[in-house]
Length: 157
Image 1 (cartoon, rainbow, N blue to C red):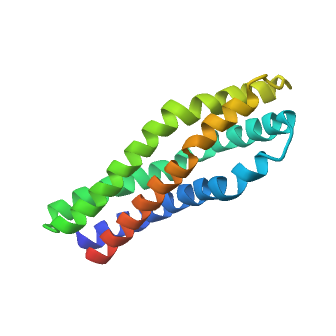
Image 2: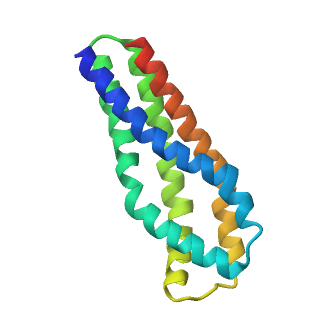
């Protein structure tokens, strides 16, 4: 049972690590870079980035979420309360991230993707991006803490 929990923790680490890396890149590199482009470029680039991100990123995100859940359950069933707690903390952090993504980021993603599809630049393109940028550091932080919690879980198992 412990080996299975270790495997699910490793899978969770891989999934969360990919999403954390993406969000961290966006916070550290993409956000300041976009501040230096035109609204039309911002709309075209981000609309297409979100198109592919929203299609492809749910897979590693789900692997991270399910890996955290499975690890928490397996650790609890195996009597490893500390590991169950840290894996559970990772799960909670990922659920908070998912709520933020669903309520704030995803609607902005859809708006920019739709504008890019129509080859239009919305008058509020910069405001849309600012709304997205306002939570990317928080999103990256939540993913980073979830990744850390899963790493600690692996050490505790």
